Length: 468
Image (cartoon, rainbow, N blue to C red; front, side):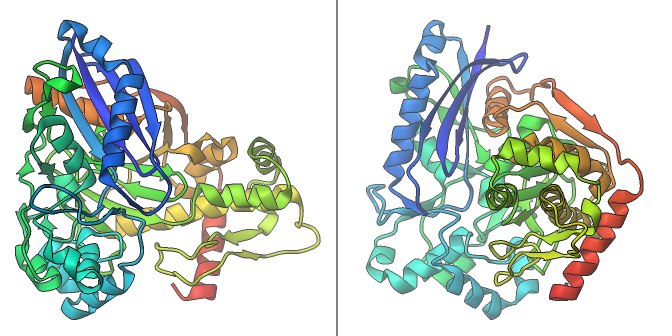
């Protein structure tokens, strides 16, 4: 048996999977937490990888030279700024660190959205690496002067595993100084907004090799793959095809797909990222998803299982209740100052079950907005793959196809980011991208007219409240 190792270094934790290279079956798994916060010493990522590696028993798996490849997928956008000795000049700023919001707005205004799409196929937001570098140059000039090299979280772990830095198209496409359409760094943007051009890691092809894993990791002769950003890793783990749209319902929500052609959206709603196969990964993100369900459950004084039962007991359309779920503002649509609104209330429909159902429908309608934006940019929406913690809700699963207006599959719960990293590792090690079976727990088809009625009511409420 030959095995490959997939690493998912997310905001919250590091997960390690040992996977059968031929079947995709999970052999072992381990994990270790990352500290909370929006900035971190990159050495803590290394420590978490070491712990998760041991927790998964990788040295034992590799004892007979069975491990042929290792791959890393990680949170995107994080700024890891290093000096000449590869020591961080300050803690890495993560994607969710918003201190660079003012810098991002100034960058957008200086060039204009159309010019940014031409340059990097994204419009700067606080998450992106270049926005953070612009903040660093302005607010920490001494640290900025010490920067010799800038890498991303997965590039840092590639260095820990192989002794050299490297990146890939999917992760580089989230920096705002790499163009995934032309596959070139835009160092002129670094010069303009950071004031200098640090050394950048080489951008490897999806099937490329970053090197060999160092002996200290106990996997003799294992190849290290190019790696990927987390969403591209999930797409690879799912075996995503054009026309299939991933709707991931976690603390926040993401909607993405793989496409042979890039999308160009000057509004910035659709990010023009790359995937991990050589294609593109148009993606939309929203702030409010599964935590809307948790907040509603808390308001009703029930736990999540009881909340889900309430939502299933209500009428499909929540008897006319409509929730705009912008509890923490929103990114899609861009409404940072918005609040949640419960509309259509009457004495007849103000029940706990209807409020629970309206919360589920509000989350689904918000995600349906993203699907419609995706379609408006020429992206096929044939079928939705529903993943993430929120997809465990029975009420949400059953309603999704009717609200989205397309068939919905719910894949078996797996660590798809780590699985995608392992699949890429097999590609790098063998020269062939393996086809691993995708397991589907449930499938749903749109049913009845209530879904389109609920959708129309939601869109009308959104336009009436916010004009978008």
